[in-house]
Amino acid sequence: MTETLAFGTVETVLGRLLVGETGTGVVSLHFRDTPAARARTAKATGLPVVDAPDRLAPALAALRDYFAGDLKHFELPIDWRLTSDVQRQVLTTLYETVPYGQVLTYGDLGDRSGTGVHAQVIGQVMGSNPIPLIVPCHRVVASNGLGGYSGGSGVEVKRWLLTLEGSVPATLDWDIDRGP
Image (cartoon, rainbow, N blue to C red; front, side, top):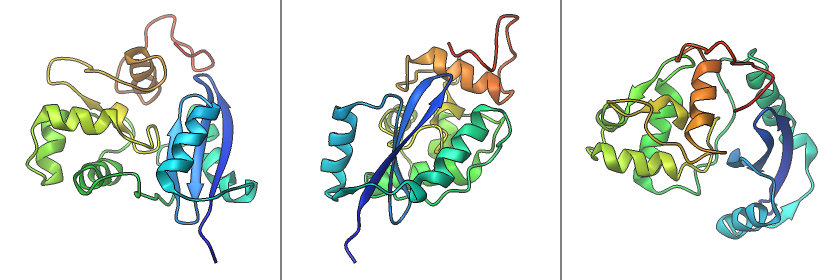
């Protein structure tokens, strides 16, 4: 049987997220559902695109539960095919060892991953994470503050996600039903 790629979307306070999933697992998450995002993912995987809503149902439900504050740990199969060996090692370490509500620095993740790569390279790996949120690159921070974030509208999305998870204190105007 030929492996395929399917897309699904979920409405969140951060907008409509686009999830790509193969028969192996979640392969991509984009903060915007655009034809370009779909085309880039299809080209990168080299797989034919099919309509498979049942395949996407668990991932989309998990994301809805996460944004409602009800899900603390994603237990979804991941397809790492869009990552290099170093990216895969770093992102797998992140996915498996940094739970909801915790953060670590870029340098600490580099050490923990066993890759021996510098904190700046870890930042580049986070910025190129093909599955943000589910593989929680927002939980990786600079030694002197939040650091950057390339998802959604940027660092304010990171701050919002860390506030949702309790890693950053909520400001008086923070609202789980309203994104940044």
